[in-house]
Amino acid sequence: MIIRVKKVLCACLNSMSSAIRCLGILLVFVVWTAACPRALQRQSFSPQEIVALLNSKNAAELNKVYAQSQRSFVSAVAYAYRAYELKLPQSEDNLFRALPHSTEDTRQLYELTVANPPEGRDKLTGLYDGYYKAVFDLAPRHPQVFSRLFAVAANFGHGMNEGEGQWFCDLLHHLYKKDPERYLHALAQEPRYRQTALVCAAGCTDTGD
Image (tube, rainbow, N blue to C red; front, side, top):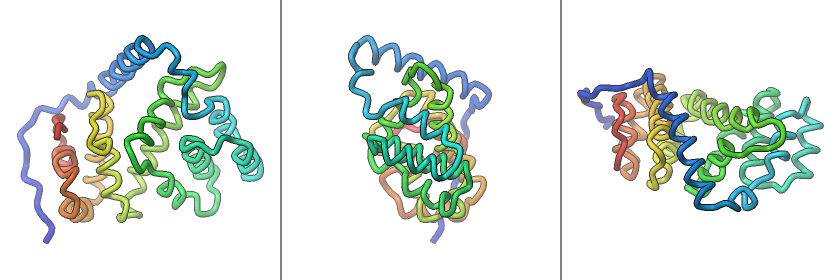
């Protein structure tokens, strides 16, 4: 039986969520580079490769660039997202096939926000924002992925910086408003990330487990 979400009294600072997120990304970048000066050399993908995928003008070019790529998790996401932008057949379904399966996958995608290639940094951050916004926005047509999106928003139980956590919570909140019945049905079946999904549905800021 579908449960009802009770109204939660909380003060939401939605107008500041973007600023908090940007500050969070900058802080993570400063700490990360200070602690690991060689981190950029150990990146799990080639930024130039991702930019090339995102610059592909048609299916033939996209397939060619992907065939020559490292076939990393991030390159698969970039391929799926660019195919969706180009409106290629089955590209919407492929967006969801590319969803993260683990905190390692979400970490690799997060690297897009701190990568600094010679050209195309805006393409990388655009992929990060655009991909996640697309899958959360399209999810009501793919209700089987709701539980996975709960896991992604909770970083599979491993937490994330405050600004990024609030950004994902906002995505979940909009998903709840679009399809509350399916959202609550999926929430009832998913005990591991229930608190995050419930708090975000209510529009609050505390997503701690």
